[in-house]
Amino acid sequence: MQNESPTKATELMQKAVPMMLKLEVAPTPYNYGIWYEYVSNRNQKLNQIMDGTLRKLGHLPGFLSRELFHEFLLPDEFQQGNGQKKKLKSIVDSAASSSKDMSKGLDELNSVLAKSRKILKRADKEEHIDSVINYLEKGALVASQKANHFNQSLEQVHAELAKLKAELDDIKKQNDVDELTQLGNQKGFERTLYQWLPDAEDDISIILLDIDNLASINQQFGKRAGTALIRYIADLMKTLALEKSVMSRFEGGTFGILLNEATLDFTHRFAELLRQQISEQKIRYKQSKIHMPQVTVSVGIATLLGQEGPEEFLERARKNLLRAKQSGKNCTSDR
Ligand SMILES: Nc1nc2c(ncn2[C@@H]2O[C@H](COP(=O)(O)OP(=O)(O)OP(=O)(O)O)[C@@H](O)[C@H]2O)c(=O)[nH]1
Image 1 (cartoon, rainbow, N blue to C red):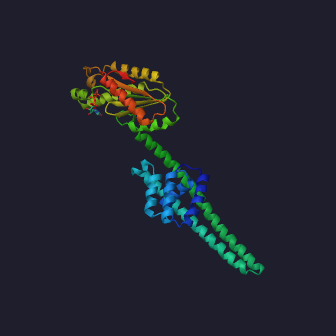
Image 2: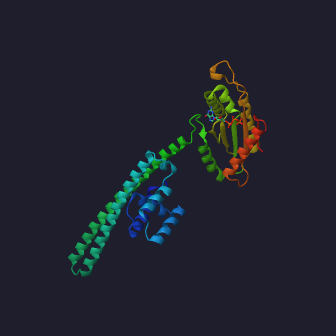
Image 3: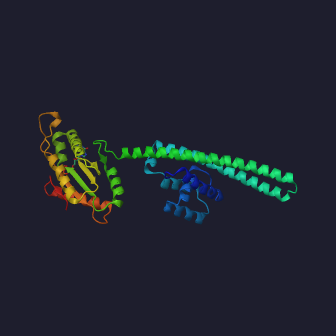
């Protein structure tokens, strides 16, 4: 569900509720959610499935509504079963209960109108007309009170959804952080890559940087020292971070940097600066006087080519990293 303005949300509900009434759709939270999405017409695939099923069966079975709700309306974070799911359910439940109330109000208004029509057919005195007017007035008042209540509850839903969305954004950010180094993680790196690519000119670049011989460092000094080294390199990278760039640790001693507005030439120079700075570090073992042997990294870089997709782009950087390793390590390769 997107973050609608209250007016837009009301508009969508005013389309969805009569449609649900016409098709005798039960006002369950799932139905409420998917019909709201259906009338918004922004999810072609959902609409195709719903149209196809309605054509074939004449209705949407309850289990399918549930499936569609989970597939199309719950973002991944909700599907992980955290507290947000409960919050969303309570929002949807409360919206569903007011939509039920609203539909009851419409039924009552319809019955008032039907009765008035009946009486009017037989009305031959002025007092008959007066009593129909009074009756209609009362019926319309009740319906409009219900409609007001419904609008208010939609506004509340809207505010609660906005709050929930902000919480989710925070969770997303936390999910994108690598706990060991506090840089981003690979998921966050890829998320940003997918976000940047559609608007990119050919000036997005990737740097993949991998600590050389980490396995033997682990063997020689212990895994703890290897892990401390990963953190050390991450901290050093942070001091050199550029604007419009994202620094991440993928796994082990492999880091990824995504640079926006960076040509191949600039990226190469920046990668070399990182590589050199790392190789010049004199790192002491467990704060003792013993220095670790020179720590080096190999680097693969790539700058976006034409219509290249994110996977091919990242794969090219990976191949260049492999080439740097095969060329004797402690060097940068861009082809
Ligand atoms: N200390 C430590 N080691 C890790 C961590 N994650 C992965 N590793 C180890 O890092 C090592 C990476 O090994 P390889 O990918 O073979 O690479 P390498 O020994 O660095 O050799 P090259 O990449 O060819 O230079 C493996 O032995 C992993 O077990 C970690 O968080 N801490």
